[in-house]
Length: 513
Image (cartoon, rainbow, N blue to C red; front, side, top):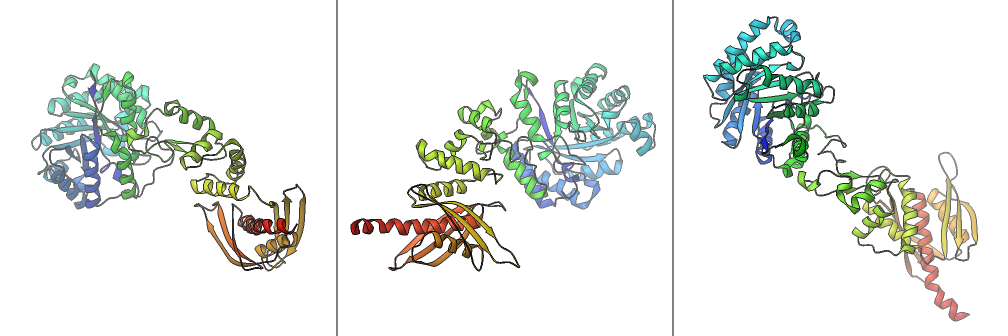
C-alpha cells in the first residue's frame, strides 16, 4: 500500500528569509492561493511575533484558505511568541502552532547559554502552552543534525508526552549527509516511546548541496512529512526544494513506496510565480523547474529524444506543467535535430536542398550559442535565393575605422566557376563593398532603399539586410541577405538584387543572339 507523505511548504516563512525575498501580505496571499492549487498539506505562513506584517500575513492566509490546508505559524519556545502566534491563527479553520528550541551543543552553549535539562524543560512547557490554544502542535528540535542523538531522543519523547502531534527534525545548518541523517531518523523509531503516534517531519538545509538527498533519506527511514520551499529558496544556501522531493518520490515508487498529494502539473506555474514575486531567478540548470531541465543540446541526446523521449528524460515535461521537451539547436546538434525542426517550421526539403542549409547552419552555429527558428527561416530563404545565382558571393573583407579610408575586397564566383576579385574604397564599409561589387558586375543600377534588422535576439543575432535597386529602365529589384556579420549580409543582399536584375534580362539577351 502506498503511504502518504505530507508536504509542509515553508516558502512564506523560511523561504522569505532569503536575502531580498521579503514579501508583503498581498504577495503572500497570491502565493498561498497557488500553493492550495498545487496541493500542499501545510502552509507555514509566517513568524507572527517577528513583525506586524508577518502577524497580518498569517491571519489573512488563515482567513483566505479556509479548511483547504493546515495553516501553521512559527514561534520560539517563549510564552509571548506562542500567544501571539495563537492570536494570528485565531480564525484559521485548521491551525497549527510550530514551536521549538535548539538541541545541539553549539546552540545550547553558544546561543541559548543553558543546559540540556533546561532546554528540555522549556521544550515541554512550550508544547503544553501551545496545546492550550490548538490541538495540532509541531515541535522543532533546532540543529538536530548536529545534536547528540540520545539527548535528541530524550527531548522528542518528552514533547510527545507533553502533547506534540508532529516532531520536526531539522538539519538546520545543512551539516548532515544522507546515511547519517537517515540513521538519525531511524533512531527515533528505535529509541523514542510514542513515536508511532506522531508524524515525524524533516526540515533540511542545502549548505552542502544535500538538502533533497537528506530529506529523502529521512523518508526512507520513516519520516512522513517533508518541510520544503518552492525553488529551494531559504536561509543561506536554501532549503529542500518542494519540486525535487515531490518528483523524486513520484518517479521512484520502487524505492519509497509512498507518494504526495501534489498536483504536479502546477509545479512550473508555482515556481514561476514565486520567482516573479521574490525576484530570485531560477538557475537554468535547476532540477525540474530550470529553463534547461527539459532542453537538449547534444546531438546524441537530441537524436535519442526524437526517437523516444524516455531515452534521455525520466520525467514527462507535461507532468510538471511544461509544454514539452526543447531541442536547442547549437553547434552540437546533428542532422536529425535540424531536419526535425525544419519540418516543424513547414520546410519539406529533399537531400540536395538540405545539405547546403545544414552546412550554413553549422557555420552559423559555430558563431552563436543558440540558433533560433528565425535564423533557420533566414537560412532557408538565403539558400532559396542563391539556387540560380549568376554570381555567388564567395568572400568579403573590409578595413575601416577612424582615421582611415574604408576599403573592401570582394570575391565572386560565376556559374561557370570563374573566381573574380576586386577592391574599392568608399565613404563607409557598405559603400566600399557595393562599389567593389559594381566593379565586378558591370550592370547599371541605383540603390534606392537599404534597411537592416536583427532576425533574432542577443548580441550575436543574425542580421538581415533588405535593399532595393532600380535598373536603367526603371524596374525595381529587391535583394535580401542574412548573416551574423552585417557587412556580409549587406553584400549578400546587393548580390542577390543584381542577380535578380541580370536574370530578368536573360530572355532579352537570348532573343538578341
